Image 1 (spheres, rainbow, N blue to C red):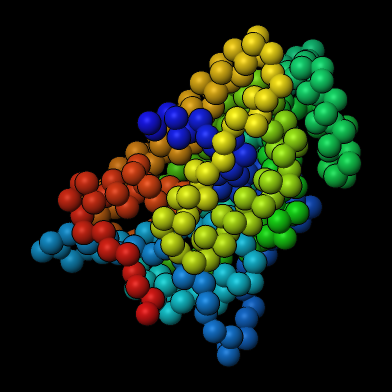
Image 2: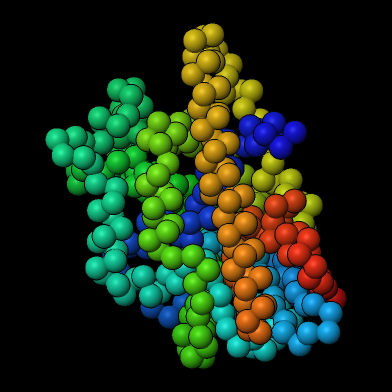
Length: 341
């Protein structure tokens, strides 16, 4: 049943990929380093967003953790934060994030090393990693959207995917500079609160590089061919995040069908397509399920070490059967969803 459900996710899985890798290569290729990202809001503005926030405790123990479901692209409606969110953040000794993007922005050597990991092999260029038709479609899309540069011909499809996925974010009218993780990172830097990285830049980029080029091509072309639907699904996902409705959020991650994509394919093409779907399931496990397991272990260790931590990770990692909230409950923790009323 789980594989069948995974096979229904094509377009939205791409954006979940973007969520999973906190901000992707976007920050590396930004023309300027983002400065303090605290959202400037009028004091009289009322907090309207009610995103998912869980309190994690254990019987007879004083340590307390919070799980806050992040989204890496937002708008002004995400701010100001609810008082209960800021109280949870302020009462926590540590902030934990998937990756400290602000530190990465300042580490030019690391940025260079990570980008170089996508460099084509000697004697090869981007077109050598794509089908002829796929290459033409992708390059045309990049030029049509003013993101093409000849230097990108030197890199493999993983880097191109990151650039193209950000087109979808821009067309959705959301802004990565207003992402939730960036907001709390800026807060923590200002407050001199200690920041813990659940993962690392090297780990995330190793994962990105490990994804087969043919799967990148498949996902990119799915993006391009169904761009309007992709933008619409991203907007719906964000609206679900704003409401903090668990069932609604899961539904918006699991309601796309691949049947339309298979229409008109020959039998031979369908066989190849099914092989790609197997890769896609592996991709989903690597990007979501396997990382959820590792994140759960890290958060479990925070508690065992007596650390009071405000944990900010993509909401896709928190909800669902394999999400952190459920996995921590399975380990015996009391995991309670915060009610803002």
